[in-house]
Length: 182
Image (cartoon, rainbow, N blue to C red; front, side):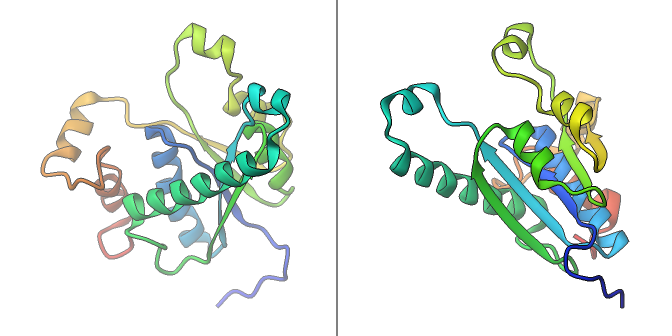
């Protein structure tokens, strides 16, 4: 058994409601299990500009944090049927810019994991890339996980899918880490 001092290395994974985030979470769970590290699942929701201008911060930030916690719980259920066995898991839901929040949360000895998705040019202009922000600014070991590239692979994985596994991520993680480990 590995005993690490408080504040030792962790696997920090940033999540949202996207296929890339689900793949990143599955990868982070496996990496935390292999290395015997704790897992910190982080969801950061940016504060809408109209809310900041209106001055209604209190109830909106509480609602954003609550929905972030629900999202993290839902993703853990989809990817690992709840809290992953054998991994000390904690959650953090904050209001702030996702890239800046992940860089601030991840320490030097951590592994920072994010998902990569395909976005259109207009989306990239309106919303900055969390992946690029983290890659340029983090001092932690940075890992970017891309969803499977082949549509046929996703179709094979989603055959006989359960309602809670709409992207086939649980089956993918079972193939990667084995059915007894997920």
